[in-house]
Image (tube, rainbow, N blue to C red; front, top):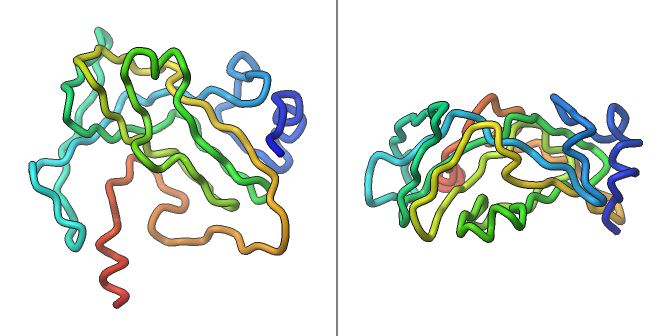
Length: 174
């Protein structure tokens, strides 16, 4: 089951937290999240899963930023979200996708209990100018059945900004 927009509205401040929240961003069965002005790119052309990969900050100026194809940009939402009762899911908006802009390469699935900003894996098929504050993606909520544990991973929980891959920490456990 996916929550309707009216159900999302009713759960705001109870089982769903979106900060800041604006009723203008509510859809029939989702809520639009906006793009923050900070981005991050990896410094090296070759990445290694077993090591931290260096990054460089990029800021979207008021006149927008022209993204290059075949380059991964990490961004984040302006909104911080939290829920201990629903499975949050992230999807690109169709208007954004129709411009050839992908906002999550593979990581649109959230965990019940996640609390933080969503890191966006932004990739474009042709050059495109983007702007901070644009409603770039939408969050929706699935019901969860059965007993479950809340997401408590130290890797991404309660993040304060863009999160590069922390996959290398998985190798440290072995």
